[in-house]
Length: 157
Image 1 (cartoon, rainbow, N blue to C red):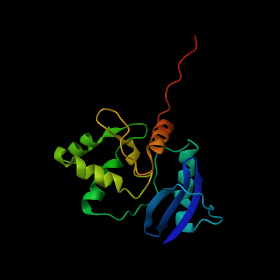
Image 2 (cartoon, helix red, strand yellow):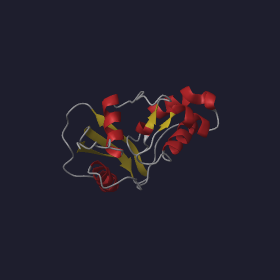
Image 3 (tube, rainbow, N blue to C red):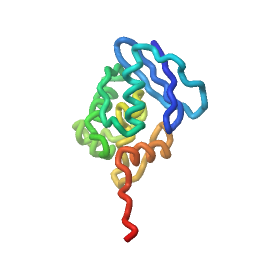
Image 4 (cartoon, rainbow, N blue to C red):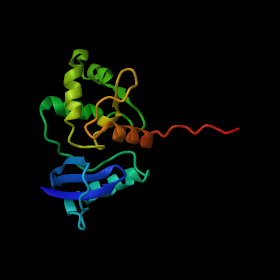
């Protein structure tokens, strides 16, 4: 497995993967040195993440290879279907997966998502519209949602 550390507006992102795809992207709270050299297997992911943060990319198309249970992978696959700039609730996601009673299991799988931003777990909010749970911190979730759908600026006149 190869790793790259890149600077983002939300902290240092750690990208892990190999020729089979990117298996993990996480964010660090600690300051660490960024990678001087990006391994070949990670270059596309690094470029696309940088494009996302500079506002020129809304979708990712590099190969992913997350490790998880069959159920977790079903949830993560469903997360990939949430369009850029949109949100859904844990309840709606549970219904989409065929069992509205599985809301806690869906929330748990969402929280174990190993592919920060790429599998957009930040787009899942509470049924009442509240920002609920986010492994990277609610301030990051808020930032990501505003980045994808900035609030409209009101007119002064």
